Length: 144
Figure 1 (cartoon, rainbow, N blue to C red):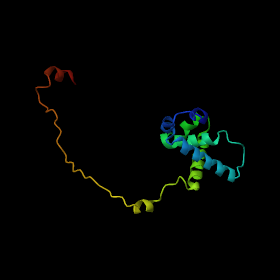
Figure 2: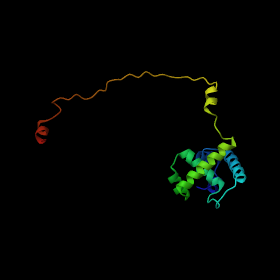
Figure 3: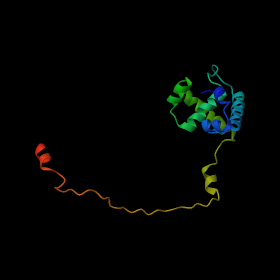
Figure 4: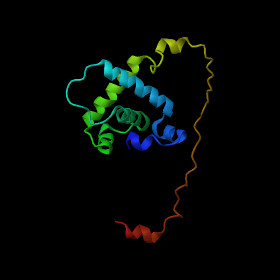
């Protein structure tokens, strides 16, 4: 599903599909356009536009589909999908606007943790008892 098909969805449907609101998606596109303009690209023009490349990346993050499956649905090779996802991730992280705090920042956070410990013991399972009344003589004679 290309960006042309997705851009007319309502905000709630767009967020359900992509995982981000349309405003945040537009901010990501602006950052990717700036990064693309500042870097010199070698080779031919990409088959997919920036919006479609961002959609591929969001689809990979949201659905955890393999590169092969995403490539088949978009009509590109799986190695192309891998390059697109890594390139978009790197550019968004490099911008600094979409990076997560580091481990040290999370450890310094003044959040109060509450832990619930549940002691679970083993309980016996009731199983039917084996006795001779259940089996019949005919079944015994029939088996070799």
